[in-house]
Length: 330
Image (cartoon, rainbow, N blue to C red; front, side, top):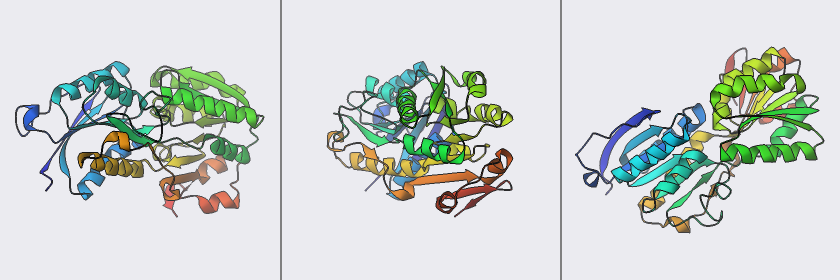
């Protein structure tokens, strides 16, 4: 019988103590600590998906929800807090928070989610097996196919890309985008940032030299997507992003990527396996391969403003279409 107890605690850029149902961590063994690198729709959706899936599976747990607000040192402090509180299991949403948890926790299970390349990030040694206390879900995105789509929609001779130089997944995706562009005969024009406040200026630095901009699942850049899109649309440059969850409220031409809420549900099922006793070492990295986990959002309003037409096959495969300011699901 799973114990029934639930309280969610949220911290934005700072740590808060868990103050419910007892005074000591030893008296509260069913706390799940969740640490995300920043708040934005995709990562928020992962968090919600985890809690919803565990609730549907019969777990009603306490959650200590923490937000590092884009700061790596805060992510490390959150990991230390989870260790001191002796949470039953810790979840890292995005690469920096997952790395912080793995570095700090040696005897508490860690589950990562929305991590592009867990091997490259040093979280596990292989995709096929988890580590002694860590495993999780990858959001490795189809970078080349996304760039090829943008190339179909516009005369893409020069591709712009802004990414966070200190975020391992962002650097890995930038390498993949650069390689794909080179293979496709497209000039790759890049700019790096160290925090979300630099995104607008970085976009301005390349906007006059590009025909389109590709935004990966870079949490730093996605959290400032409004600034990037504002600069691009002012210059009449289309933006394609790999994060549909964060694109609905902005003027991107298209967004093609994972349903991050479903990713959270997958992570929730993985967490349940660990809570029931399966060693993390026996669980390899889970990759999102089901077609139903992929979303394609296209914005007909933006296309009209930019003088772009979507081919019929893209129109037919889109899961969401923005037209006259309204999002239609199909």
